[in-house]
Length: 507
Image 1: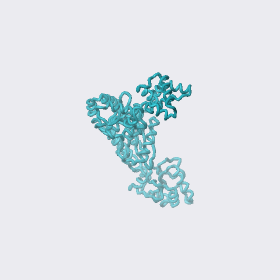
Image 2 (image 1 turned 120 degrees about the horizontal axis):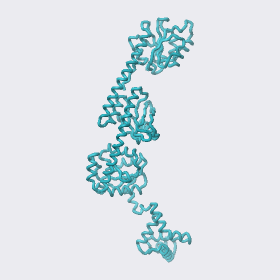
Image 3 (image 1 turned 90 degrees about the vertical axis):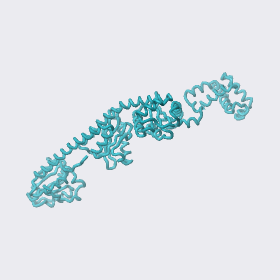
Image 4 (image 1 turned 45 degrees about the vertical axis):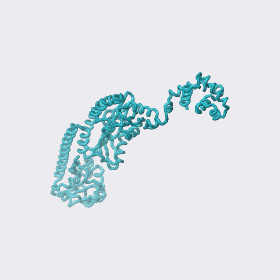
């Protein structure tokens, strides 16, 4: 956004046709005092004109309010009144009533750090007021012209194929600022210019965006990171926010705010339209997943090639998560799929979300689990002809694994019996062992422990008896009693295996 200083104190003093001169050195003024805007010019010789003044006004006087016998206190009080009313500069008409500027007035302005300038006799006060009014009008016209040109540029950008990104880039160019679009998950989806923020600043803005999204209400907010101000504005409707636009600029004028408002409206509309497209894409992805699960990838390959450039190259890892259909997860995966191209595919089956990545490429899986606090199971690498088996492996890893990202190879290494640790298996095991447990409790025997030890020693009586520190005949008697209570023949392998599984399920 092109900035202009046509209405500042410095610009007014720089007008050669007015012949004004600063009477107090700039080093003696408040930093930035000459950059203050002059909103109007007024003249008064009242001893106390402050009831008739407004902030940002440059006051002109000929000094008739000062008497010959006035002391420094009178001048100091006069200047302090002006400063308290927000006067940005004081102009003194020299050689009208007094020769030059009274030294006590100069001293008082220097002490108060108020800009004081001399108006020569040949420059009428009305010329200064007219010059400032013309500058204000010219600046307003320039801003209106800029706003019209900027709105036209934004509208043209919105017509491009990448309309949303092009619109944000044009907004950044027009405002000469950094503009970032954060998605509903709080991730930075687009920024212009790219990489303009350092890591700490980007993290601070991201934290504020996350806070705004958690509130779930349409709102604007602002924050200061170091010396850089940021303005944030939500996109979407209350309870259904689509994202946040962040701009590295502070106080925008009306034209700048109008431009930002139009971009927010365009972006919100684009994101709402994208929601319908996202639903269609989701259904299409689900169809591709169903085709892959049939282990005939021909149709899936054709659709994926036409829509997304193709599927990840085999061998691939199939991952699964039981995350609910959260928009934030889907949007994050869409963004990653767009960035990765053929290196990531995802879609839903009837219950779960499946993610397909090339063998050894698990960074996105780990980041997804960490970002959204998900549990993910991942299969062994394989080809698309065995996709259904890989999906089954991912499901097992998801159910049996430990941690955010679990691999089937780790679960498989723990053996088949590791799958018994479920509520259903434990319920069945307690029912199978109930006759022995009840007898132990009522009679004070140790049949459950005796059977477990006997099975652990491959049903050998002597070794089991030695392990328990009892006689082998006692061991035989206990197994015979257990066999009678259970109503099974423990001489058969099948009966012993069933009993062993029950014991392991309760271990």
